[in-house]
Image (cartoon, rainbow, N blue to C red):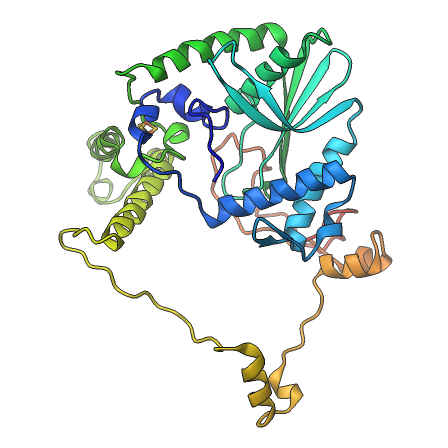
Length: 382
Ligand code: SF4
């Protein structure tokens, strides 16, 4: 696993909001997940495509960081490539930038930087589809922009910085501009927060953004105390019941209050369950719990040998299931813009989901007719 600078740009949301996290995470090994590894593979694919000037589907079926490039990955990465390829200017990929003037020894690697006469675009690709990343005031990108200012201003007089998040699997391509003066002001905040984070008594400050990726999450007392306090206060501050029914049922406003606190509590409880399983597997006793074997499904021991054996008993029509190509697979076989895709492919409505009111998507409209419009060029439903 790559060793990161402790006060990293990618971890800035954490250490700038909870300076004590650096102290608490000390000694806790960095872990990874299948999703994180898939993201690393998608980044490697993007870097290779940009370097060689190839499209992502040229690598379909190839392995990157032990992940096979499938259509979903290729399509997502292609959105990132198209965004960069459509920008004018000098382009740098996987570019190391130094923000040392603000955080001693600070460096990071930006996915892409495009410099176009007095204007800098810093682009970050996010492969995740769980949580949409907001570009506005995004400290990771702002720190990369500081790095560009530090490393490249000698060549150009930059006035504005455009920061971009390309997160295709949540339909999120967002751009946000910041002036050089505002960026330098942010640099002073970074300097101040980094100094606090390095100090022995750096305070702990639990919150959704900072705790989300913190390695100390399952064992952090400040977060546990806050979550218990939140739960207790939620119930203490409930509205005064005005009828017998109100005494027994939560009101819509109370449910709304609970919802705003739920994400942090959910991710905290599951991090504790994961941590407890890990230490129980190491042999530690967790009072009142034991480790058992989970459920699993039967599978062929060796599929080739099983296939040969099965042929003695079943006809081919009984052994295999036929499945039709997906729209994306058909489009690849037919070529982009084929009339079959225009005429026969639709994008059905997604299921309703409850999200925060400032989410960029249009509100759900129950009256909207679910008529089957052909999808737009280039947009597929996989
Ligand atoms: S879990 Fe949250 S409060 Fe605790 S150290 Fe990490 S970021 Fe800070």
